[in-house]
Image: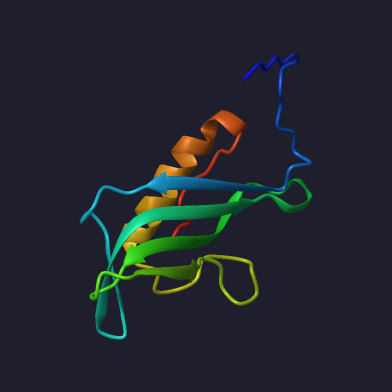
Length: 117
């Protein structure tokens, strides 16, 4: 395949959403829902910066294996119902996933600190 490219790509503040994917080491994160354990193997964290506001994490979508080995998708909404702060009851391990994603996203200009709880 022949390919050439020119220019210097820049992500601008007009880009108000960034998704960061993380491959998780097997067995390092177990999500429990309705008494069933799901072993997460991938996380996709959605960050947003509407109208030039500071970046905030909105949602994490996990790919996981269920107790029967089947793949499932679990979504965790990180913002409260009025979108002005973090949702209560989010486990610390999920905030750690968000922090890892934010570190990975630093190259596109995201600066992020976990919300005060």
